[in-house]
Image (tube, rainbow, N blue to C red; front, side, top):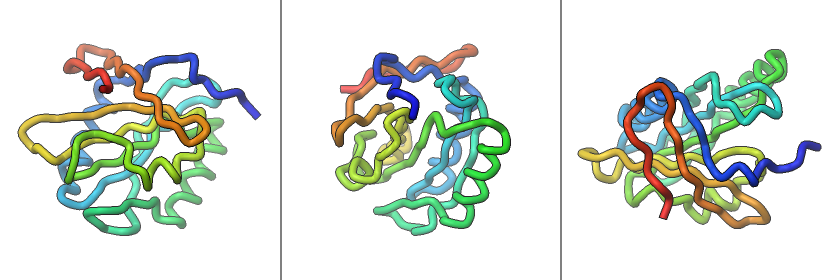
Length: 153
């Protein structure tokens, strides 16, 4: 099993992928949006945006649709990919990893990106790594001339 890449203190993400995530979050508001960004195995490079359906269709909880998740994981396996980023939006608070999401955050090599749609006038997003049930905020670096990034608090 690959070792967690927690020594990498940042998420580097292409601007077009970040914009796709933010657009998905805005489109689903007030419901929570969710999805992932796949990349080559053991690369820590988010390369392929995968918009997923929130099976809960809820303003307060999200989960991947099980059938869609199975198809997506089969496709990633076929392409020698893994989830590099798992993202979701929330509409009632800032971009913090919720206690519920933290309990389900079992992939230690994944960046968990949280997008807040609480204040529609400004975009807030933060990335976390999770180890032993503890979320650690990390810097986000957007490449390809994208808007700036925010440091986690």
